[in-house]
Length: 130
Image 1 (cartoon, helix red, strand yellow):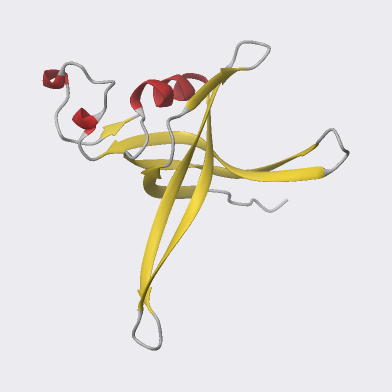
Image 2 (cartoon, rainbow, N blue to C red):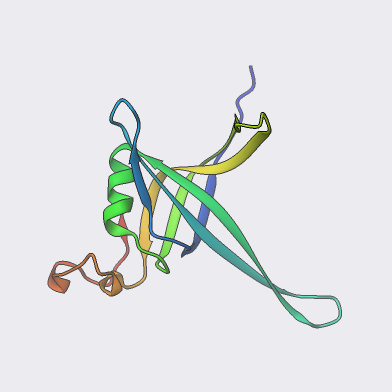
């Protein structure tokens, strides 16, 4: 069987603080949104910008790290795979959602702006990878 590839890498800005939940078995799962923007010049010379939103899900230790270190408006690198899940609501309507399932996260920029960091001496201005 031929191998496939499902790998996604984004750099963007958090649209909201991560939300941490636990599965019935106790496994942590965090969800948050990341906005990426691209700019280009149209054929008539006009500058355009487009923003794409990604729903990100992190599991296990990475979920807990995301919850404790990420805040709305921070810049972040996220790497993982795309996964689409489906469910049926109470009216029997089928819904689908495509998510980036994260396996790596790197904080970008100055993390001292985060309210989570009380002791600025513990952190320098270099990227922080998880």
